[in-house]
Amino acid sequence: MSKLPFLSRAFFARITNPLARAALRVGLTPDAVTVIGTTASVAGALVLFPMGKLFAGGCVVWFFVLFDMLDGAMARERGGGTRFGAVLDAACDRISDGAVFCGLLWWIAFHMHDRLLTVATLICLVTSQVISYIKARAEASGLRGDGGMIERPERLIIVLTGAGVSDFPFVAWPPALPVGMWVLAVASLITCGQRLYTVWTSPGATDRVVAQKKSEP
Image: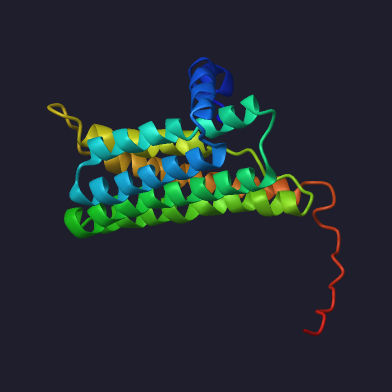
């Protein structure tokens, strides 16, 4: 969860808990809400961002990112989620993040023709996946791989704010997009290093692993 107080679970509980109960009453499941939110977020990012509608795209993505928080609230209302639900939610988060950066990458590369900003966006795209993978792979090995300068909420705030401000109606500030993207690129690279260091310093991280022979098919 985010380190920012205004993005904490407790902050949104007053809104999401009543909505979660209502969604459960109409027959929706947490997994269904996850898929709906991700599908809409991906569609908004891949349709609006390549068209240069950065403010509108940012608003759509933000709405459905917040909508996606309902799945966790619904799971808690039901007494807990499932292991599959947790994996599905994590996978959908990666898909949604990838769509955001791919949509922006299309606009930057083929309409802005900014090579340096294209590089920054590619860094953000790759590291958004690597940061999460380091944690997942570390935990699968019984090690710690969390923490770091930024996590998913901060990443979305930076990129969507930069995109939105650069295309804000009547008072747009175009430099906001490159500023936000480069800040995020640098912060993401630092976070990758921090997480790898956390893994490296975890108890047992440097213990030798005995290779197992592959069984015959």
